[in-house]
Length: 199
Image 1 (cartoon, one colour):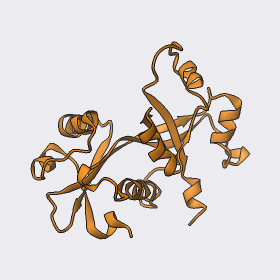
Image 2: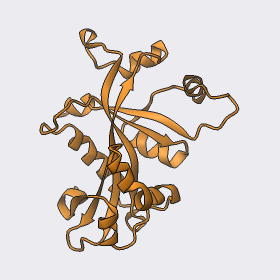
Image 3: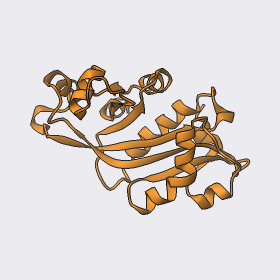
């Protein structure tokens, strides 16, 4: 069952919308802080747009929230084997140095709805949304800087996202980070042609 499509409506997320709703927390202080304190500024600076799904039977309940931004998948500096993996479904004659993408900047599910498959449902909605024929531009990938912890990485992996870099060391080298520094996020991607091939 598609809970978000059947029982919820999507709205633009803003401080005004938040003020009309019951308190929202996804259980992560950093994400909650963004949704409550930075969402309007992020939108005003044209850095991304935020949305939320609210219950139809009680629109004051935010089920989940997320932010999307335009981005690109730059493959110029990827190691050969990783570049080949990322672009494996792209015909040779269409090879570019970078490809259009959407960045999932923030994503959180109301703690009251944890364990109900809402996160997976939300990612399915995002995948369909960004490939909608009404979009005015192309988008080949969804990318995310996923928190580098088991729970977050498992979530994205279960939604068919893959690491851009095969190891943390490889990603640190790409970012110019010293080897001893902690890598707090991992760059992951989903090739939307995988979705198109199922349609």
